[in-house]
Every structure is written in structure tokens, then in C-alpha cells.
Amino acid sequence: MELKQMKYFKTIVEEGTITQAARVLHISQPPLSMQLKAIEEELDTILIERGHRHITLTPAGHLFYRRCNQMLNLYEQTSKWMYLERNILS
Image 1 (cartoon, rainbow, N blue to C red):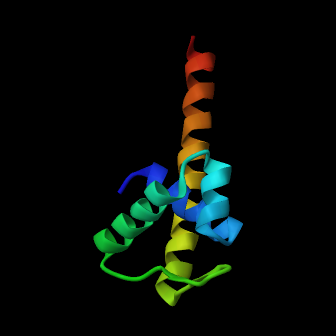
Image 2: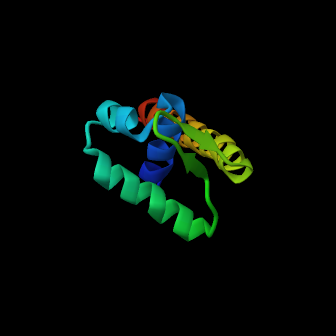
């Protein structure tokens, strides 16, 4: 799984619809839906119940959302740390 996929999932959850998430991410809706399906297939579980007007997270979806936030935050902190280290040591 890639960080990009985690960012996509996080955006879907926060925007409440795949269509709105696609707008925010500046991609079309079908590829975003395919990415969500790929994540679910890789994890072998349903993360989101799709409705006409909004999505609902499954229990596994709630857990995965929390983990995505943790991993994306850790990646961001590590990137900032590495940037500072490079500049201090230069």
C-alpha cells in the first residue's frame, strides 16, 4: 500500500463522498473509486459502505482511518525532521 492511497482514503472519509474527495484531490471519481476498491481488496475487508449521498465507515474503516492518520502524520513529522537535519548539518 502506498501513502498516496492512504491520503485518498483519508480525504474520502473527511469529505464524506467519493465525488467530493475527487474534486478536492483534483482527480476524476472513477480512478478514486478504483483506488478505494484496491485498498479494500488488499486488506480483504470492506472499509466503506457506499450510499447515494454519503459514505459510512465500517468498524474496519474506522480503524484504518485512525491508522492512516497516524502513518501520514508520522511521515510528515519525519520529512520535517529530515529537512531540519539536512539544514543544520549543512
